[in-house]
Amino acid sequence: MKPYVILNAAMTLDGKIATHTGSSEISGKEDLKRVHRLRRECDAIMVGINTVLIDNPRLTIHKIKADKSENPTRIVVDSKARTPLNSRILNKEAPTIIATSKSAPKERIRKLSQKAKIITTGNKKVNLKKLMAELKKMGIKKLMLEGGSTLNFSMLKEGLVDEVRVAIAPMIVGGVKAKTLVGGQGIPYMKDAIKLQLKKYHTLGKDLILEYKVLKSQK
Ligand SMILES: NC(=O)c1ccc[n+]([C@@H]2O[C@H](COP(=O)([O-])OP(=O)(O)OC[C@H]3O[C@@H](n4cnc5c(N)ncnc54)[C@H](OP(=O)(O)O)[C@@H]3O)[C@@H](O)[C@H]2O)c1
Image (cartoon, rainbow, N blue to C red; front, top):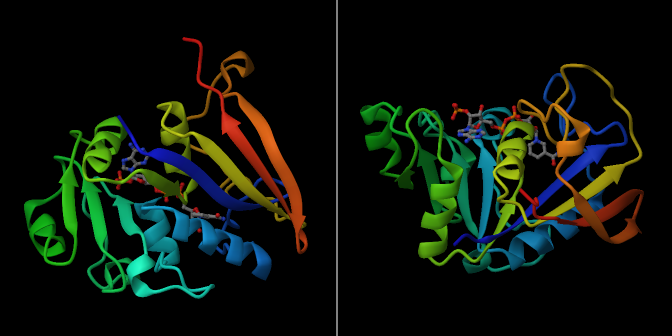
């Protein structure tokens, strides 16, 4: 059992979700509102630790009118409990879960547990399947995956993503070191690609929104 997972991201036409310096202001203002409406529909928002370290996001609903009580739970996938204690994701605007592994130093866990709930799965890295099962047990039915590139790959590879929604901005930045929508180790052969089905597409301001269903692998 797992929550229903929607991977959402904004990317440039060349598939980058940030520049090689980590700059990631891609969405137009209409798209930002779409993202915040989607946040409001979800019980939780999940990101990888690098996104927290680079962007220091709040992950709350603040681009549209919403009550503080509508903010989804924030989840950081952070094997070694590196989330800085002063990061915005630990503010009091919404509950936060730090998903760690057994490799996290005990002292870091102790400090973080004063500001967030800790869920430990996996030895070196977070075991995403077990994490999803735990979250479902806690009542999280719909989860928005907001990146970055490395976590997106792991979640897709493990078959844990149900939908992919992307906003493609009319911009190109290039750069071999700039993160793409999906990074990680990658899949060696095209025949093994994760297959999607296009469900909806429309323009929103200058951006193009594409919504796909992830087709479950036949294996
Ligand atoms: N445009 C957009 O929509 C958008 C959205 C989000 C992020 N971004 C950009 O994405 C960039 C960050 O992406 P990123 O790829 O560097 O990092 P990331 O996906 O945010 O975080 C990856 C980290 O998560 C941790 N992790 C723990 N268990 C994992 C598992 N089972 N599978 C995968 N990761 C696991 C690992 O660090 P540990 O081993 O330390 O745990 C891993 O290095 C930033 O520049 C940010 O601006 C863009």
